[in-house]
Image (cartoon, rainbow, N blue to C red; front, side):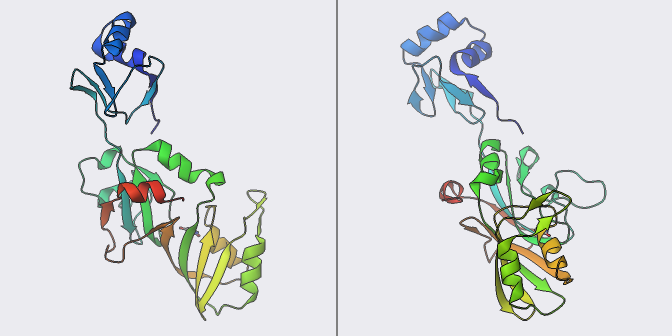
Length: 236
Ligand code: URA
């Protein structure tokens, strides 16, 4: 979803069908509020989620929504699909059709997924420079050995993309289970990295993104809205 931006005077002129000269007068008379603050600046840039009022009447009052979902295996990370149930189908909120996905999980991966209608937030999280970490619990078919740790930390060359993966932290939890922390999200990245050791991934579950942990009490298929603190602190 594109985040529409506009200059305040243009936005008001268009929405209220008045001249920009009249808009300037209304601003000078302190009649316009943007996000509960008196607006004076005709050049102010507002976006889809700016709350704009004129004489106390809402001209625009869109809300930003941020959702954490516990994605089950077998549900597709898409907004529409002709075969599988989608993550959107699992939600019951009135605003669900406005949402887009912040980073995909494979069909057979479970765990934390984020959805929002705030593309500024999702773009920030998805930018490679944000280096936001994603943690996965991985269950493997064959036994793990200590050499995996260095191989993940060194990165692996992915011929198809022509790049070396960024250093990934692998912690061995038991013979067949590891935690992997990635700062990027290449296609089937974890499965391909374990594939180098000819060790198939039996189960993959994402339990955190940045500072945000999937709630333990959120059962598969369940979701909840994030708090303002969670939204602001996810990559701090
Ligand atoms: N790596 C994978 O292989 N699959 C996912 O869903 C996420 C990371």
